[in-house]
Structure formats: C-alpha cells, structure tokens
Length: 260
Image (cartoon, rainbow, N blue to C red; front, side, top):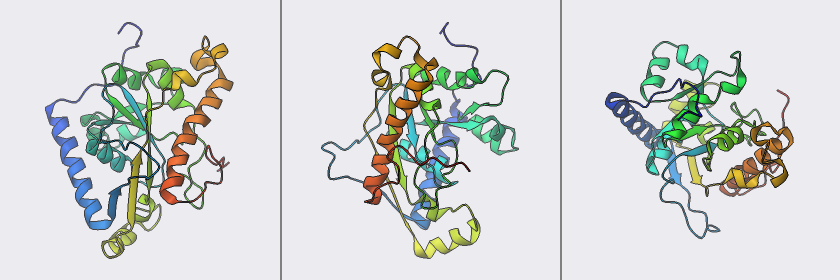
C-alpha cells in the first residue's frame, strides 16, 4: 500500500451494499418496463463470458445515454461483480445524488485539481483492494449523430498501467432510445409502449501492459505516443463489439474524433 497516495475512496459498508443492490434491482425493473433488454450471444465468440473476472478489473463501455452508468452497474451485477463507477468530482457535490454516489462506493475523479496526475489515485486505491472499477473512456456521451463511439481519452490506459488491472470492454446498444439526451420524460413514457431493444455484450479481458512497446515500457504512463497508440487499440476492441451488436461498420475503427 505504500505506493498509493492517500485515497479519497472507501469501500461501502453494509448500508451502501444494500442501496447498491436495491438500485440495480430498480434498474432491472425499469428495463423490463421500458425496453426489451438482452445480453447478446455473438456467434463468432467461441466462449461467451458468464462472469466478469475476479480481482481488480477496469470495465469500460461506450456512452450514448444518461442511463449508461446505471445500466453498466446492472450488467456488471448480472456478471457477478459490484462496480465502482468513476464520476466527476462535481457529481459528489450535488445534494442527494452526491451522497448516494458516496454511499454505493462510486469513485470521484477531479480532473481540474492542482495536480491532474493524482486524479486517478482513488481509482488506483480501489483497484488495489480488488475492486471492479467502471468508466466511460470517451469522457462524455457521444456527440456523433449516429451514436458511434468517439475516440477515447488516455485515462483508462494510464489507470491500467499504474494498477496492472486488465480492461474488460462492454458494448451497450440502444440505451439512447430508452433515455435520450432530449425530451427525456415524454420519450421514456412512450417507451412503455414502444419498448426499444437494448443489447449488451461483454468482451474478453485485455492485458494493457503487454500492449506497450518494449522500448516504451520504462516510461510507462509518461510516454504520450505509446499511451495514444495503446488507447486506440483498446478502444478498437470496444468499437468492434459495438459493430457486431449493430451489425454495421463504425466510421472509425478506434472511435470518431469530434471537435465538439
């Protein structure tokens, strides 16, 4: 533990675990009413995951809807793990919402702090305790008009390299139809009748450390070119899963690059 700085994350007590279980139950009920939810079984996969790996893991997913954080936590629970989602520090300052986030063990990330390099320390601390940490590598809901993933930020690879935890990609398709960015209430009510399809699939764990070129391993998270290359590789695995769920090709195999 000496290599970790003082953390700003604590494992939830019994009350937090109960709240988490209740929350994922409510998400399951919501999905049953307002969507046709399924965990996909892709024909080209010889072995389909029935559980997420034990031990520290970083779970990443594409981001199309305000529903995604709850959906990813629910999916992880279905696959045997309790997920500690990364959320911006601002979320924890919102009345009620911030308190609930802390109660269930979500992890604050303050990118605007005086030392951005320390922003991942709470997540590293959680991984050091064997937790499953969840994040959206795009950093925001995709702005692409057809909801394809955007190019990822390098934070997930930095986190994987500093913790040694594998990355598990999870593709989620259809959540934007259940909870859209606009006209949320009216569209959600309509979905009680329409019940749009929502599909997810869990990919194989990725050993990020092994993807770093040998000549760049000494620099680790400080080699910007290697970070960018490996981030695009890992994001490419997630985009590939999204393509297979959607049965169509993405405009960019490692995520589209948008300026706004």
